[in-house]
Image 1 (cartoon, rainbow, N blue to C red):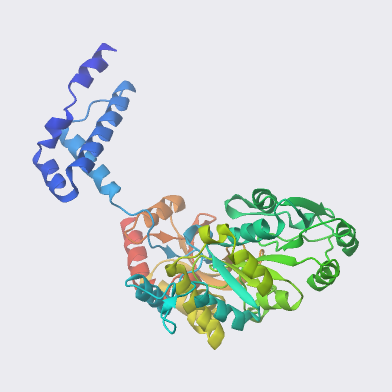
Image 2 (image 1 turned 45 degrees about the vertical axis):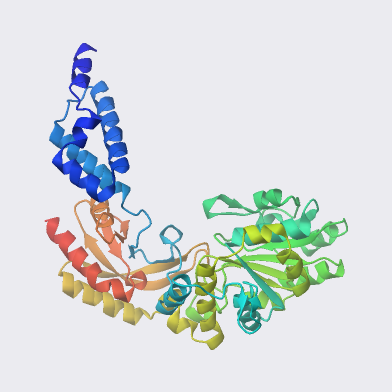
Length: 456
């Protein structure tokens, strides 16, 4: 213990380090308080190192480490990356990237004052929901719409307003958990609604709904199995059948559609995802879905359906707590305009990726191979991701790089100024052109080539 105490006494004080010329320059740039905190934290870390038996570092190294710590304070942790994984709606990487026109709309509204809650024609206060409601009505055919901050909030709000302290009927096949720990039973519990599960894990029949509807209830909830599929010995009635029974009992049918599909996914070689329009036509009274999944816009929770129900929901105090801000509404409006105009596939990035022809992908990856002079082109699959279309893949072509230490190479790519995220299979690093944005391609190739060269 005595040698450790001697080493601790040799540690320079905070005041002494603050007089060093290198530190004085940092104080000028970053401010004294930040520098003092960083030095204190660094000295505390060194004390722990000494107690663990490590040697005392010199003052020069203490200053270097303190400066590095200060630099890290000012590095943003939410950063742009290049997604070369082939997962189109990569939840960990922010799901749907936004198109240039959507970014312009967000910039125009957020960089100045706006008509967020102002009616220019009347010269008086307006409603923020107006900016997206008419668009959603025209696109989906719904009577009304409301936008909140995400789909979990949308479902919670609907249940709290329409079913608090009352019974909600839901099939046990739909008591799902998706990414981030979102569980339908827990949302029901938080809303104050009472869960009435019917059927079994793999099979539910129309008679199960009929029996459940014989008891006093608030509504029927149908939740889309967004990130898994039940196959084999399974059964479930159609939305139309459930809707007919529910309405005969005088109750609303609420659907958590989740993915935000407004286009027919089967047209792109994928399994059919029930669209919002189809669910409304089948008899759903309210449909809740996300803005940043297959819709391809900013994060949002969208509720469309019967006006009388939505007016009740809009008046609830929780609607104000969960409401979307001007940035979300500007981005969502600009995204929805493409569906209204019928050019979503051309202008919404995720739909450009989904509709990208394998021949074009092969052309891009062959160009990559020529520029890099390394690797080989192989066939593979891109994934939709984001809890949408589970098990569905799109054929693609990949650049396959054989490196000595694949995980170490991935780490190197993650530490680039513009990080590159790829995937590893059988000790090879794979890059999928489908999810590499065209405007990122040049720097992507430069960084990959430099990383290969440095690894030799």
